[in-house]
Image (cartoon, rainbow, N blue to C red; front, side, top):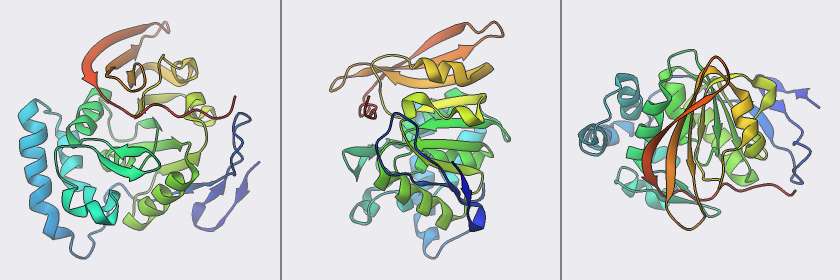
Length: 251
């Protein structure tokens, strides 16, 4: 059931598999965020992050690098961790979740091979940082977060920073967001122990799906799946990673 709200906010009912309170789906910003007071303080930190953590490890996609330089990562971490926002590591954001290491964000973004105008599904909104990077490239982003507090915070943060064409939904990401499928690309930022078939079904022919798969509490494998015109998947191993587990709703 949908209700239209001012400023293009939409109220979504949860999927049938969730027993949590619904959270508004929000239109939350522009592809190029406006400058904010004090942001220039961190411009050099972002440049150093890209140069030594990302480019030095082999990420070369110009759109990815430009987005990583543009998005103010310090705005996506808790206030007490702002001074560590550009370090080469994941950081806690509360509720047992993290904002991924900058290199991993860049690696996964590059692997998606997205272009401006692509429709992208993200599973695991977290702080909203990955969604902001995709929006900075010019993608239309649909992002699903199961933890209500994180979904609400991310939607508010993205709106405040001026990102548009990013839509936040609170719900069980295992089932994707079928209403807006098919997607040119899908990115999953938490690790299930198998490939969710609903996501495969929502991926367009020719689309790319980047996802960590493996056991909880141990290293997983980051996979790139490419969907052929016949619906078959071609898998590429992108190496070992360590993600928080994909949280599921009540079954």
